[in-house]
Image 1 (cartoon, helix red, strand yellow):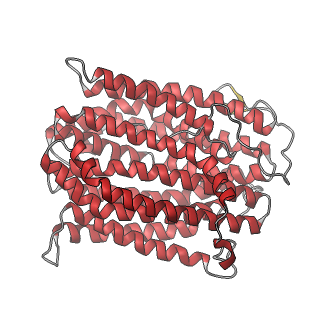
Image 2 (image 1 turned 90 degrees about the vertical axis):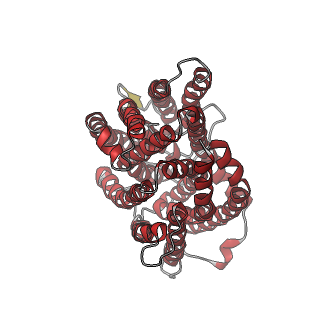
Image 3 (image 1 turned 45 degrees about the vertical axis):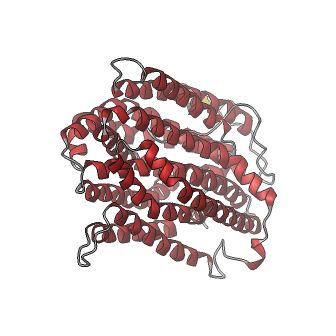
Length: 483
């Protein structure tokens, strides 16, 4: 366990962010390498995997629900120096994640055919998406318990095990993918299904490996025979924090579903161009995503320990870091969008859609980075309702007009990208206002001034008490994606 309630906040943020960034760079590298190999199979294959990949946002939504709840409640227990409660909450998180994973597996396999037929631009694209999902759904189901273990470790300030296991499993995934996709050395090519099979194998290995960190008697969080009895009250605590955050990701999945649907008349190349553009954005957002993973436990431990001045300072420093990184990525997306898209396909129609998407969406990168940091602060304080409200407003401003405009003569996908940019700035303004209000409620004094940065120091929060329950008012945590 690492104590994040003392010492330099900048050092804590940079150290924990670096661990997460290494892990995410390898994960993103896998996604991009995977897409590169699939791209060799043709535009329909890219479109099929992109459609199937939309299910990944649903997985992220559920994983966010479980991970945010786990990190928040465990980090508060760690901040209060209550190791027994932290261990018990870890067991409850793992039980809940396993149950959710089993339900996801059953429903995912039952509904995948209907889903791929609904979104496929043609029968070939739908068939390839189904081939991929038959293996990828089990892989995604196993990610829930894997994510719960990683979230619990992050809450204790221990990022190294998750980084090592995740990096190694991603390397294994990348190594297996071309052999299974093209049949190198075996003579049996599985095509797009091979990419999903390699993911499943890597996740099984990673799950077993990460679980080993909870076996030693000296582990701060360890497996305990007495901890497996279900505690519904603990589940309610975690879901109370995690459900709104997970619902945000569900709305992002809905947004992508809508985009793929309105793109149907434009063909597989348009769907694939949007899918490749989304992958590039996910890659570029990895530094700020890693920063968000660092912000939640750092601010969460300090909140649990009754250190409000360090909670506010965490937001200020993380906001500055996120703005700088996202500004650089925005410049790159303006200067060389074609080159980034052509890495995965040289189809002119695909490149045109993907490049235009990147060039327009890049105007909201900095705003999206700030939104993500604000979301992590809501998570750290145990109330993700504000961020949900801000994210919901954004989705309403994109999805409803998109559905209306798609029925108009001369409809173009560019209109959707412009709506997305506008909505992010609305979400940013609402997120910062809600964060200011939440700081005032939770930390005892007005917290934001000027550009959304903390102000004066309020009275400390009693370190011996648990965080106050989330108010029923409209509030919730924000999203990462610039899409």
